[in-house]
Length: 84
Image (cartoon, rainbow, N blue to C red; front, side):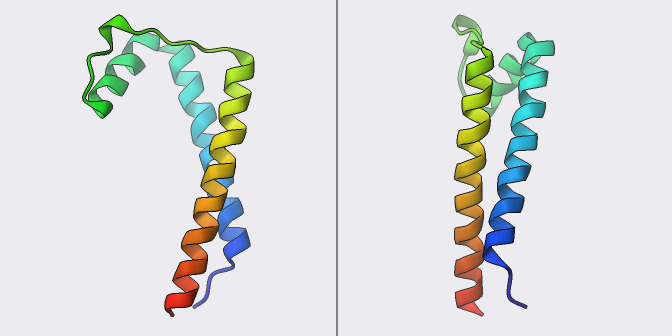
C-alpha cells in the first residue's frame, strides 16, 4: 500500500505543531518539572539554566518545527513508497 507522501507530511507537521503547543503549555505551567525532565532527556544538569518563553519564540518554534516535521514526514513516505 502506497502512502500519499504529501498528506503524510501534512499529518506529521500538524502533529509536531500540536506537540509543540502542549510542550509550551507544560513549560509555562510547570517550569521546574519540565526543566528537570528536559535535563534528564538530554543528559544535562539544567540547574544553571532557565526557560525563555516569549510569544514570538512560541510562534517561531511552532512554525519551524511544523515545517521540519512536514518535510521529514514527506521524505519518509516518499522513501517508503520507493521501497515498495
